[in-house]
Length: 341
Image (tube, one colour):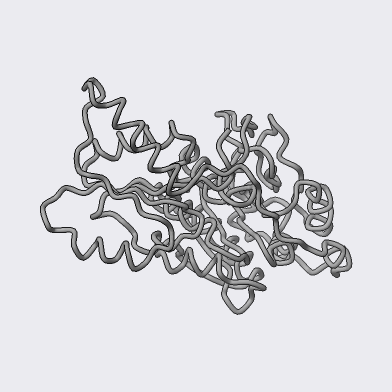
């Protein structure tokens, strides 16, 4: 089983080299978090603390000197530079090259299995919160046909997240034509209390994302901590027999990747309060697939590192407080309905 923090970034100047490196890295027990060409590299990803090793394979033509200096300056992770000679898979030197690469990787960044402790929360504070008036659904949405499943919104949160997500969900009306996946960095033993406390005043159905759970509008499915999830076409949640990658479960980057690849432009994200940069890589993929990404405003966060990192990477379309995000979502859904009518 892969460790929870065995993420590797690849920068290679050809698509073939990217493919060859991804295969040998995955075979060594790592997860490829970024696989890009030098031209498409978002340099802010170099500072992402969830990536433990960068593997760089560039053609030796002298044009990458500035990029190489950026890599050396911006990343704190070890860097494994290739020699520019990757043999073809059917070449007699290929097995020897694979072993040499994997040996170097294990020396630079040994595969880890130990989990990192999740942020701690006082969920009792949420149970004492007072119920607030909800926003109303506009007439354009009340009278619109209600699809089986509207857009998917992935809510990513860590330190300070439960209060922010509760403030957001409490303001949403019952018949909202969207479904939500709530991914909170938290100890697995606290999930039941999280569902109860965050969902206490919500009009939406708050539930745990059990294996096989069907996704429907007006539902908030709390993502499991110990199992990575994929999605079936009906659509439903599918538990995988493996843990999430990254330092915490659930991994926002991996969840956003899985959701964006399955739902395409129907997948959207909100990055709430949290420490670190989990969600930054996944948000970029959501944008690439045509989805929308918002983030909690810095001044309303307990810890703004996570939404700030996604914003600085250029993935965030708009930022606001939890209340402003809830109001913005209703307007967004109404505009979307008008555009598709």
